[in-house]
Length: 191
Image (cartoon, rainbow, N blue to C red; front, top):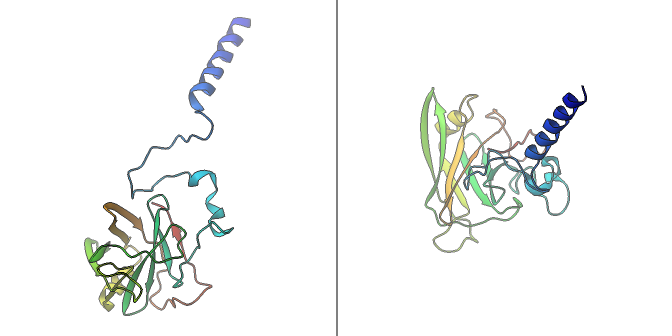
């Protein structure tokens, strides 16, 4: 009986030693840039995003839905009404506009069960430097209808400084959504 207990104890110690990495490490797979399906938030809980000075907002400066790009390197803010869809590129805190060198950003979605890619052209803000834009806008009621469908599964795709980023867009499926309604269900997503 004593030798059985020793063997069991050795297996437990071995399992603990193999299962635990050095302090501060994670057991998650390293994701390529822009594919943030799993990340450790640098030691803080996801719930703390909306708390404290260093945390980013749960909705953007234009009261739109926040999309995380990369490991919170950048964010996009999606604002739409019945006629237009606007994408704002924001910093890691989701507060300041970041002009990028791009003529458009892409939204991939399902329309009537078929995949579709839609280019959202640059529409630079007044403060954006020449040749760059922090704002991308498309005026298309048909797109908004497709974007708001329950099974649209919209994803944003763009390149910033040579690095490709993607992020899922989770939003309220309501074409009457008021982008200035602070009580609306704005979602923060991680891909």
